[in-house]
Image (cartoon, rainbow, N blue to C red; front, side):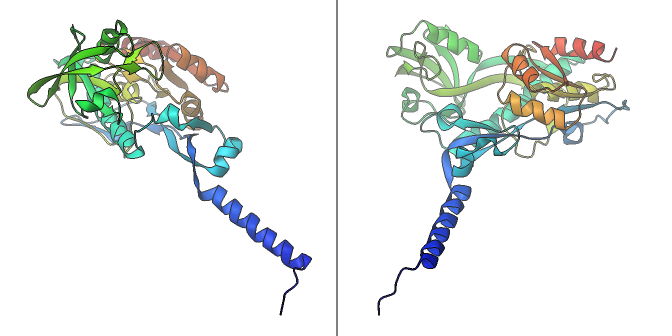
Length: 336
């Protein structure tokens, strides 16, 4: 017996199909990422310094900000404005071709660990402690599969020479490659544990600047650091180097310096061994996160980061800084 397709059955089938498509759109991942604001968090409850009790302090607090990053669903890819403060970011921008989410996450966590150590060195030096901290090369955080570097390098290697020039910092590596044309060969020396090794690698055009030669690695600062006090910061799996500035501020506060001057201070910025505050990403979301925490001021790296923060500050005071010492001076006058 043949069943007739009635309008009711046709409508029901259509609703089922629509529900199925909506379900897929809501749950299935897309090829893009979503940046979302996350409320700023106080550093103090997460930080301990061996043998140092938290000194009596005023009502002020130091906050760090991070960005929630996850793959966008198909629905979110189509409607990124559904969440307040969200930004849709292409996979190429956040995750270079060939680098898995797991590898990216692992690299980000290593960057956070290194950021904590450098922040402690900078803060303790400012507090008058004898800190032995010397830049020792460009630490390989990740190697892009298929890139020239993949023939020789692996994460945790330390590049100490490139194109005949000594490499003590990531900046030294970039400058060493500036005189190399994409496609040319370059000789590098690197440490793997206690072994010194060398390799001749082809170069490719940088993804950020096609005229710049690259070998396909992500690097951070390697340093020989000996701290006089043991510092522990519980970041609960948050990665990246952008909390270096607030960590250094809170460590100095914990060591007895009145850093915040009674203000609630949010801060972001990668901190280098000489105290330089380097730019970071996600300023739109970080500014919103600082605003949600109700802070008085938000310290950010000077330049493009500060300009982006001001666009989303909605009346919150933005203080651009280029180094740790300037951050301290700015806070000393901010409460006046």
